[in-house]
Length: 436
Image (cartoon, rainbow, N blue to C red):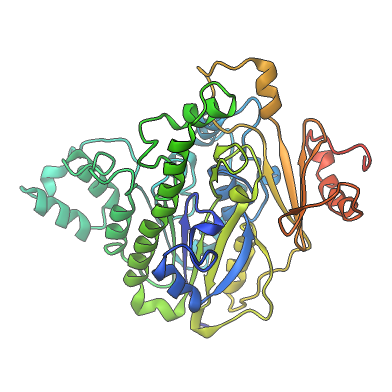
């Protein structure tokens, strides 16, 4: 049996309404054309920020199961350091490891510094290119040629992409200092690299694009964590004029993402028919629809509803179309390597947040105020219903059906709460007393 090639293109921070076909008012013609050849799913992210969601994608487990998530005491800097030192680890046999064992050529390219060798997210990849690496000169560069052109070409021929990128960044062609930053956050470099990586089949390629991620042109001068947290705590509010510009710029970024996605498809056009392609995201972006800018912390639809468009190889199609979690992709790909293209229909879907993800030192907020915001939350989705519970107080923060608020006395709430109750024995999480 011929194994399919597998390509996952993850547009970091892309909310579900950022692209067509989910939103007809957005102009993303290449993604729209791709969708016409694919199956478009409703999907939910297991978390509202990068590290927990990627860990779920690579393991098929929720954050409460793989434990790679924030807490009141542990924030993103501590979390990444623990991963780097091996104090916190992904569960065994992550997706890339499994596929490598199945004979796949596993390649990862990431524009997100948290999805990198530093956090061990390169586990299982034969080649992993982190384009955010700290600058370092290539000491042996002169051994590969006398001119810059000779060095680059010889490094490419030898497949020394890590050394190539180190040399590239040590030269004058700096990505993050380019005149097009923050519109381009490394996507141009990623698509260039994809055209030069050896795609021996069967291949598994994972790509993280950052074009949808903040900062955007209007807020690029602000330190991101200070900017949105100071607004959240009421220390310095973002004025509405600035926020309107940021909203417009966010959706403009989808055109950039669309173009880069098209370039990736161009690279694999000769093997397109036998390639399973998944276009998705790890979380969305709140644009103060509910008085919050950024991601993490909350489980609003703007943060956890994500695109999921799957192109099946050789005209394969599923028997039925289910709502999905990013956690479903792990088992789905494992079955796809055996020629089975069915996504498991989940009885319910969970999304989790464990408080403020950012390190908040230097922000003038008292402990009592912080404790109002820095709390765990869980959401459960089932058949159009959504329930969000504050795990510090047991308060029901959101109860909706197809986006419309419901009375908390509606009998459907008991069923949803019981799904959350199964997590109570494994962690400190307060549920409403009516169920406890």
